[in-house]
Every structure is written in structure tokens, then in C-alpha cells.
Length: 259
Image (cartoon, rainbow, N blue to C red; front, side, top):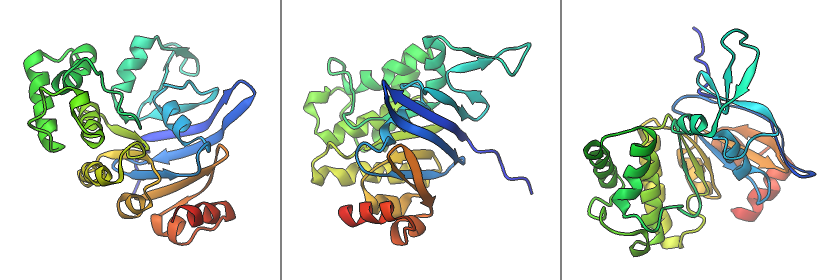
């Protein structure tokens, strides 16, 4: 039986800022429906890797494939080996396939919760206002904030803002969700509400790449754990393999500090 092609393929992803190489040749495949949790110390390149996947950070070299597309490029119709860089509005259409949730929520402070969730639907997908509002309301119900559509971000707790940010990303019907340490800016008592929403998405079969320090979440929800350090993948495997029985000394040292 043929194994289906990965939804996401990273090939030799490198990223430098000046003379500092942050990503040093990352190769990674993510299957459809898989939850991949990326662990590693601060400065290991985890967040840069996520931002390279959706082309917020343009890789210095290497390519990101999502399904049948090379992110940031199109193939020449006459010579498939020749690639042309896309314009920013074309990249925005590709990004719509990938929802991203940041550490700091990134909600528009001058917009209500409802407006935050409908804005990209109308701008990028040209969704009609009534339909965009219906989608937004359904998603607010899903994340437990069905009665907060008229609120402004400043009127919400950090955990509530992050759940709105998740709803906003889901409103674009993404094939892939990217989470960049989504609970790191939250007070401890607010973390569980956000993780509960993420667990529900995983159970629904959404493909997710999660940069996190929440080891319990990675063990419970992750199909695969990837440990990064110094811009490279040190080891990867099932949560029990990487977290309970790490093979590399750098992984053991990191886990001994965070557990």
C-alpha cells in the first residue's frame, strides 16, 4: 500500500540574520492530521522555523512545500524546474492555508472580537459579511466565548484573547495550524483553557505544529515530538521515545531542567 505524501515537507531550511545562522538545514515531514510538538531551549530556532513555514521569515535557502505548493514561489508553466517568487498578495493567499497563533495574541486593539475574526475572511477570502459573521460566531462558541463578540481585546483576559486568536486563525479554514508557544504569555491559571481548545482541535484531526514548553501537552496530544537545539533537529520520535527515553545528551539536559 502506498504511503500518502506528507502535507508539509521542509527541505534544507536555512535562515541567517546577518552572520548568525539560526536554522542550519532543517528537513522535516508532517503528515495530514498529525500533531507535531517542537521542544527546545530559547534561541534554538523553533519560532524562526514556524515563521519560515508560512514565509513570514523568508528562508535563506531551502523550500517549504505544503501539499502541492512551494510556499513563496510558483513553477514556470514552460519549465517546471524554474521558480518565480510570488508577490506579497499571492503569498497571503498561500498563508490562508496555514493558521498561525502567536505568543502575544496579535489582535487588532481597535476592532471588536467579531471584527477581528471576520476581517481576514472578508479581505483575503472575499467572504460576504453575513457569512463571515456566522463563521465567527460558530467559532466563538467552539472556543467558549460565544457571548464576547462585541468586546474589545482590552476587555478580555490573556487566555480569552488567545482563544479569540485561535478562532481568528480557524476562520480561514486552514489545512495546517501553527502555534508559537501559545501559552507562554499567560498566567498559569489561564493556560488550561487554551490547551483545552487545542486538544479539541487535535481530536478533530487538524494538522498542527506546536512550539511549546508544555511537556504534559506534548506527551498527551503530540503524535511526534521534535527536539531542536542550535538550529538543528537533535532527535524526534513519539512522545514516549523523546520525552521518557531521550537518546541525546542535549535532549536529556533540556528535559532535566524543565521537568
